[in-house]
Amino acid sequence: MAKVGVEQSLTNISQALREKGYDVVDLKQESDAQNCDCCVVSGLDSNVMGMQDTTTKASVIDANGLSADEVCQQVESRLQ
Image (cartoon, rainbow, N blue to C red; front, side):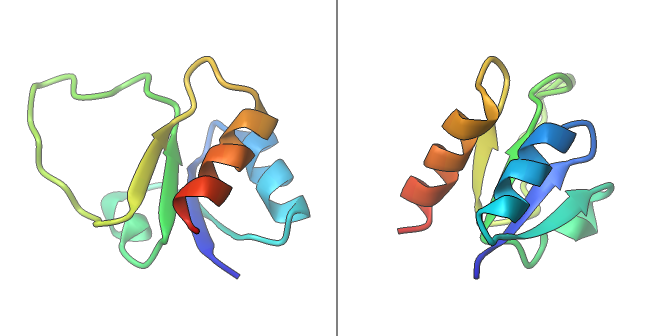
């Protein structure tokens, strides 16, 4: 199954993805995202300094304002 990186503060989303069978990794630092197929972030500290360096080629989903089910749907659609 696909490996999905999820920001630590998004525990409800991590749980929902695990229930659907995804391999969920907590994103604590940049290197955690390297082998992920998709990453889910809270968007709270999004581009604070205006920098655009990327550490992964995986799809990044901003979970701000989305329910756990909506995030799961986005993960599924981006991994197809």
